[in-house]
Image 1 (tube, rainbow, N blue to C red):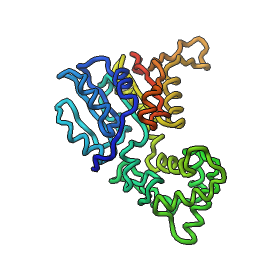
Image 2: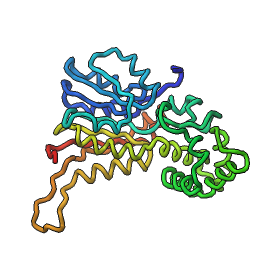
Image 3: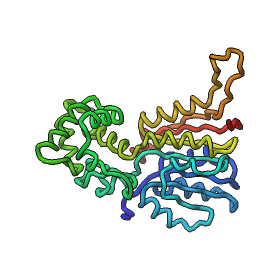
Image 4: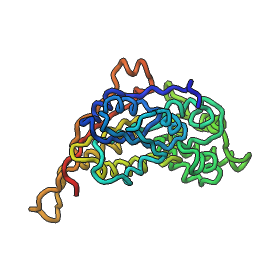
Length: 305
């Protein structure tokens, strides 16, 4: 792993302070990345405290191996596997969503249109198919839906047509540069300061890694593993993620009534919403990739059913 690919952890102190309530407890860093949050958490835990991290990325797992702390362990798994942990076993779950800077900046990973590289985009390169493999056979309707739904791209149809036409004429798209060129030719208007391929690359990354489905599964699992009073802290970087987190917290942070039984008591809340935080101007100035970050915090109630 090239150490020149640096990652600056967003909302580092704010996230850890929101997460930790008991230094003797067990916590989950569900997105280890390059370990910024994990290292700060460990520095604030007592000798009895424990931290379990998850990450699908082999480079992240290799970085985690450099932490020589008996209180720490890493799992090479998706955070949807939180559900495998015992019920009410942890005092906090942290999710720092999206792609990390080293993943974007490492050309061979195929996440970025800034480099010409194989079109991969898998978080876990040991499992599943790459974007290039999917595009080699995907029907035009599916490609259109992925770009429209996950990229919120209004030229989704034109981009999908260009990808399929290229496949039929010269073979499938196989590199990031080929995809970026096709998208640029299909997108008729430009957003100021944004590469025309930005939305399509985001859409394909989210789709190939099942990011939104796994986020929903992890959020549901957090209700299972959090102890009463335990904290759920989620940092998201685009509106699709944040919408899911916001709606999940709202759903479980309000009393619901069964309208079929008018006088039945309300179903009790499983979460208490604690707040929403965005990076300050100084952090955004120092790390422009932080500008879109939103952190939401909720606390698990004692309602277990």
